[in-house]
Length: 217
Image 1: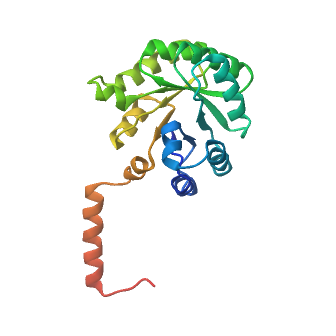
Image 2: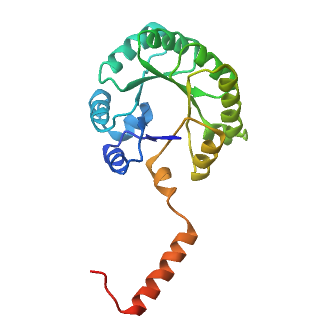
Image 3: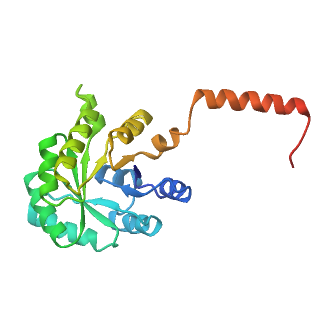
């Protein structure tokens, strides 16, 4: 499973990219706001750091305007994936931009039917939101599983990009189900390294090493 980091903070992206833990980046208007940067400027910088897909989201709501914004975003770099919402106008935009050879990430997906429409419209990625479904007492992982089944049944090439990841368990569960990509905040990706038994084991090793009175260097 590929890891995308869900942020527009350059320092977070650079750290994970240097470790080989980033296959791409996803951004949205809220993350651009948090970065405090101009969308075109920060997106261009991200694309210079990461070789994989970088999702940049349109903010218009009508298809013609979305298409215009999408073309402008796509011109930033060859690895831009234009992010559009899963609305009827978003699907129209997806069809036009994908036919023009651009990567398209269809976001805010909350049902298998929506995911099926996105695949038919030629989406490169479909982004089902796990955490937001969980907030409504609906198991978001069930949606990932349903989409996986449908896409496999018909050999759709659209990649499942699990989004709204809230925990390290979401990451491993998505990998077991067969999501192609999971996008998560940097803190979630880094937290995957944590385990209480690792901490306890290291503490014991260090205590025993101190008793030897030795030094490696």
